[in-house]
Length: 487
Image: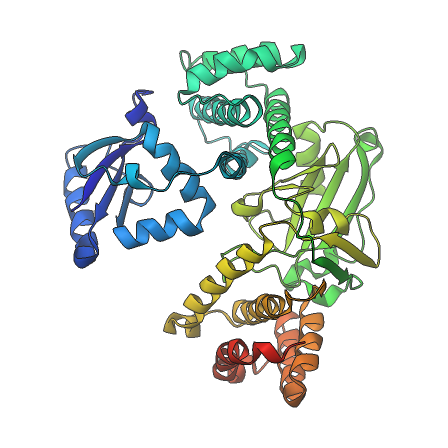
C-alpha cells in the first residue's frame, strides 16, 4: 500500500453530521494491484461497526499507481479533482503521491473547472421534478453544495482567486452577483445551519443562480481556450428526421418539433430536434447513433414548473438518452434536463460548436473544430479498443453493439481524415455506412447488409445482427491498419 488519503468535505473540515461521507482514496503499487479486493473486504468489515462506512462504491477509491496516473491523464473529472486534492486531501498514511502529480497550466485548470460544473448540474436535474420521498434537508444540502461549488469555480476562473471551502466561496461571491440573486444566495448559505427548517427551497431562483455562475465561468474560460483548429473545418449534412432512426416507442416522437403551448410562448423562442453527435468516452452505454436532442431555446428563464410540464407533455423518458432534452440559455449555453449523459450535460458554443451549428436548422452545417478535438478522438479511440478487446463485448445487447460499431468506425475514420483541411462528419448510421463504402469499396455489400439488419433491429423486427459480431470486431481492428488508405 503506497498511500491512504481522506478526501472531500471531511478532509477540509466541512462536516455535516449525518450527511457528510467519509471518502477515502487508497493507492497500491503496481505489483500488488491484486490487493484491491482485500482493501474492499477490510472496508466491508469496518462498515459492520462504523455505520458511516456504508457506500463502498462511492466513498472508497482504490487504484494502482498506473491506474491513478492514467485517470489523471485521460479523464477531465479525475484530473480536476486529483489536482484539487493537492490542496484539500489529508494524507493518513504512506507517501504523499498526489503532491508529485505534474502541475496544470492555468488555462487547463479553467477548462477542467468548467467540466466540473457538469457534475453538479447532473445532480441538480433531479430538482426539475423533485422526488417527494427525498427529505427536504437532503435537497437543501444538495443546493448548498452545488451553488458553493459553482461559486468556487466562478471565483477561480473569472477572478483568479482560489477558494477551497464552500462557506468561504458563498461569502466571497456576493460582491460579484447582481442584486436579484443576493437574497437567495443568503438563504442558500444559511441552509447549512438550518437544514431542517421549514422555509421553502426557491428552485427557480436557485437554478437561475447556478446558470448565471456557469455562463460567466464558461465565457471567461473560452476567452483563453485554444482556438478552433486552424486547418480543420468540419462539415456535416443533416439527414431528414426519420421515424426509423429512434428506438422502440420513441419512434413517433422525432418526426417534427412539438408545438409550443400558449402559456409557454412568452418563455420559448422555438423548439428544435437535432441529431446527437457525441465523442465522450462511454462508448458502449451512451451511444449517440440515431438519437436526438430536443433543444428548448429560451426567450427568458423558464420556471421549473413549466419545464416539468413541457417534458411531461412530450412524454420523454429522461432515463433514456435517445431523445435528450436541452435548455438553451442566452444562446450560448445548453444544459441537459436529464442526467442520462452527465459528462456532456453542459455545452457551450466554443467547446461544442457542432451542437450550436446544428441549431441553425440548415441542411448543411460548417464549424471550426475545437482545439482539443484531436486529443478527444484519440482518447475515445483508446477506450474503443479497450472495449472491443474484452470478450464481454459479446454479451452486449444487439442494438448497443451496432451503435458501438457505427460510433467506433466514425471515430476511426475521422482520425484518419484529420490531415484534411476539411473533414466531413457523418451523422447517423446510414451516413457512416456510406462513408465506409467509399473508404472500403470491396466491403460495400457487407456494410449495406449490416446496416439492413441494424435497421430491422432498430424498429423491433427480427434480425440476424448476431451473425455480424465477429466480422465487425475484426474490421474495427483492421481499420486501424488500413486507415492510411482512407483519403
